[in-house]
Length: 114
Image (tube, rainbow, N blue to C red; front, side, top):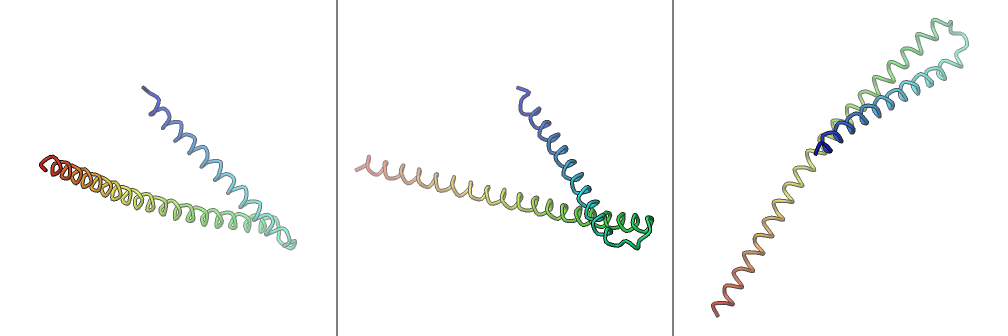
């Protein structure tokens, strides 16, 4: 009976590992793009090149983080909206089911009285 809590812990760990790996890929991509950006600028000194690459990576990661936070906020918003709609749909289905059952009961009662 300890299956579901363990599964939740495994899912959380898998999500953390996946998030870590995705972020490391973002870092590697930003570093590669920064290197490609400064490559043609042959007149830069090593210190200048490193500074520009560092600023490029910092900016790219800040933008990525902002994008991810915006996406996460939207996902949370959509989840709440869909949960609300699901609850509303569930209430309607229960109401329709009860109305149909009441109608059938009323019709059966009338038929028995006739």
